[in-house]
Image 1 (spheres, rainbow, N blue to C red):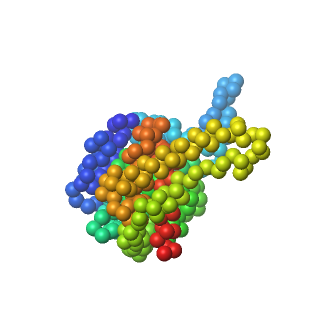
Image 2: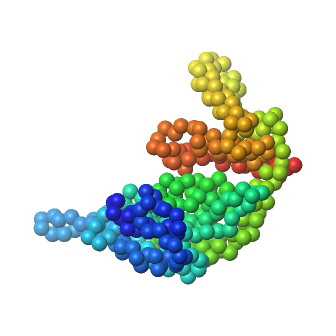
Image 3: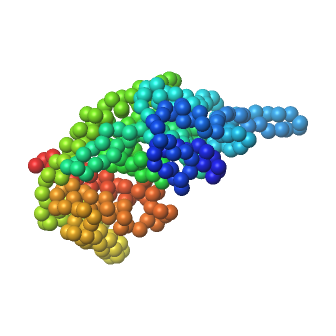
Length: 341
């Protein structure tokens, strides 16, 4: 699998994951780049059983990833399923978006997901530049489908892919109508005309980016321009890290004692979070000023750099766990604060 990644990832000017793959110095189309990679194909073959010397079809087919002499089973399906090839998505990207490729490659334990990124207009918050990227993430295992995101994280590996999706999820209320997972568009591969529809959406994202980025820039600038006292910051943080309800408010008197220990523990954890985020806001954070934007950055710095994840390096927690929910909630709380003022 190491050789698969080494040959089939590309990055424009910046190194990829563990310095693997190719680093390009001149802007190129996705198809041109892919033409230098080792060909990848996905095929479907029916499973069968031999009974008394006769073959019988099981009704289930396997999906296999073929690269050179390497064949890996990546999924299965019953009935019919239309297999699409990486080159179809790559050609759709070039046709509908018509911009240089930023990064492209395959990800996943079985290298069964293709990603393509391209540069969107940057967000400038009084000189603080936020990079923005379009991200196409498509899988070939019969379940994952295709998803499009606008994100501030540049995808170069599986971890940054997860972080890019979480970043898109945090800013899903940016006016593009993203779904609950932050994707602007999602579709299964066996839906009619799905690659053409995907192309239309990629073009839409790219053309809409200037207006959307301006809107996001205005929103972040509004956060940055809104001063925030320590007391008001604590009030906002208290909405992000809410204290649990007292047992007496939701259970019979006879059962309060059983709930009390759990309640006391949650109160202590919440207060610890409040104390930590306040310390970051009051000078302990990196380049954090006394504004609403500074308060938001205090929460993100706390979740990304000060909270110890229970699994792996924390990326899984950022993507689907409580940390991601907290950052999403902080964004909503801060945005609401500046909107109603």
